[in-house]
Length: 505
Ligand code: BES
Ligand code: MN
Ligand code: ZN
Image 1 (cartoon, protein in one colour):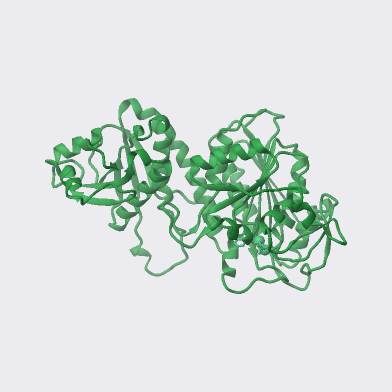
Image 2 (image 1 turned 45 degrees about the vertical axis):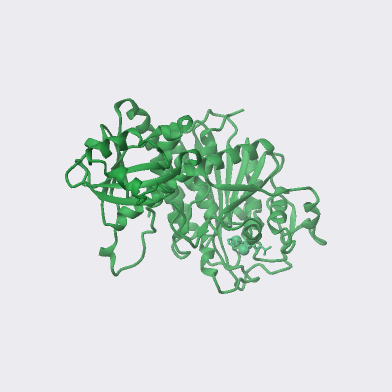
């Protein structure tokens, strides 16, 4: 399942107008009086074809508009694919990603296998490198499809095989470097999407652990997996309680990456690895229960991020903790009213077995303090309430550290992943107090995303901490610009961006 990215991206020195290719991609801005250099040259060689198209209004370069024309021998390229970027004054990295995704999808639809393009860094002069990365990111991420289990009609399947980036000699080195980085990051997004797309019978806690072991073959990465016996010995009864109803053995996956100096405090990433959430005895309705195979999206994001950090050789230490289990009803399952003693020693009254994410996370969050981390970030498909509050496209952010929140916001702005902060005032703590134990695991529907985070906060200790609730964006039921419907791999790019900018203190 750990497969190669299907679209191969190569870089060569040269001039796009002189490149032999089935199709050259030209990205243009809307309403410009003058064509940019490359387009002007192509226009001239085709006897004013581009100018005519724009004058007639056939191609206005609106965001993600695509038009394919034939060169009839006027250029070494057989076709020209024009793609719109919208008005230059409104251009963003997100629009660049979307445009390159759309044009590649269009060409795939025509059953074209190879394309060439040149990326004009001056589109956003103060972010030249990011422009190159965004174009390639869009091109690759929009091509994602889950290697399916279909056995019929496979030969009709279309796939782009190559995108050649033609760079001027003076831009070659920078372009190559950006593309190598981008490939590593999109590989990681593909891994996260593949893991989340896999059905729960093919993505059990044991299989997740096996993937972690594979990631740990990299330099400076090691993996340990705590099994049920070890968890019992450690007293991780919150995690074990959730696992009690399932036949699948739970695993606590620990991935360590040591790219930083020895002794530098690591960044701890904790990801919810619930491989199937039936709700347990507080069982969920049948409708859409299948989507609960995605309840390990946070765990997948953590694993993929560590893979990318290792491949990028980032100079930082990271520890990834992924509590992995199913949540199932069964004769030995957790029952509403049960009381558990967590790894931290604090007790929890389980009022709703469907509020299981917070139970598995707190044992991992408390365990994280063993590493004396510089920061803890947890990523979880934690609450339906977060989706109600912010919508399906937005990550809910709650936490205790202003600097960490600012850093995450900044990374999210660059990667186009929408993050919005929800408050975590102290009074929310009152809502999760239990009459019989220290805390209860559910405070009902009101403010559900916040009370869930308030619950987690009781187990993180004094470390800078941020919680990202990805219940909305982890899975999409509609195609988005460069996220085909299904698993999004959300937060992988955000976390890698955060770690790339991370400065040890
Ligand atoms: N995994 C779910 C949250 C979820 C909902 C993820 C929709 C993705 C899409 C979580 O374990 C859950 O069931 N949460 C409950 C909590 C409630 C019982 C307090 C919820 O949100 O309803
Ligand atoms: Mn649940
Ligand atoms: Zn869940």
